[in-house]
Structures are given as C-alpha cells and as structure tokens.
Image (cartoon, rainbow, N blue to C red; front, side, top):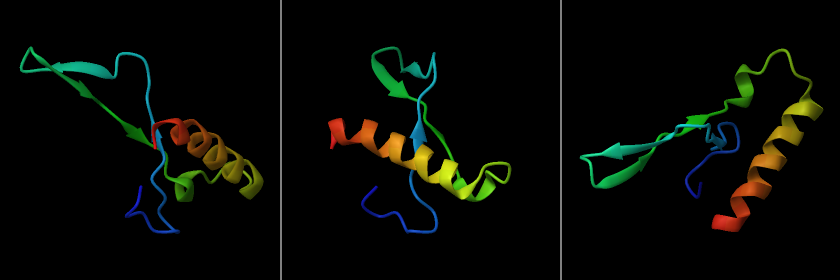
Length: 62
C-alpha cells in the first residue's frame, strides 16, 4: 500500500476459501483486487465509498 499511486490504488479483497495451503505447512492468502477504473457501472461517489470501506478495514492491520 505504501507504493501505490493515486490513479491505481491497492484495494485487496478476501473471499471465502482464499486461505490456502502452500507446501502443506505454510498458509498462503490468495488476494483479489478491485480496480476502480474498471467499475464503469458505478458512480464516482460509490467508487469512493468502496475505497473508503476497504481502507477502513485495512487500518486494523497497519
């Protein structure tokens, strides 16, 4: 997140079953990413709200 640019923000999304095993002993998290520029069916206000919710959820881990 520290290296993101303003036009391409880092907005990870975790879904069910994204925690996977890697070499049996190491857990691995598979992340999906929302790209606001591809949300053409959403208004700018909705896109900003989505970004705000994801960032608020991530603040716990930062």
